[in-house]
Length: 134
Image (cartoon, rainbow, N blue to C red):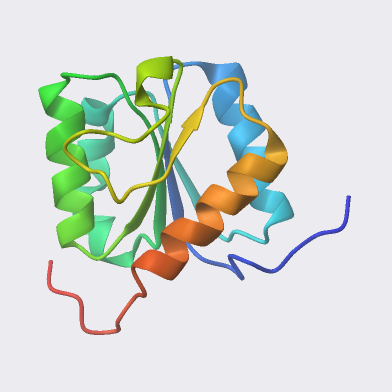
């Protein structure tokens, strides 16, 4: 596979409960030239990175419908200026998350081309600015 520079050293947060899926996401992000990768197994665990949220360029977040902790995490990251991609095994979310309709959703199992396309859409949707409020 040809390495792409889509993420060009950017910091990425991965929130995924399943180790093997997180490892797969990590490999796909490395192929896109991601820089620092932060890993969390849940939305609650991702809160330990809250002081770093303004410096996180992209978050790949496992999404379960009607999960208040995930919704709070999404809201906080979006307010910090982070681009977000959701991934879920819930096929009902194939058309998007009802509360976050502009965020790309990938249904598991992830196809690499779909992953790349979703990352491209997410980072194009919300360009980073150097003076993001925390």
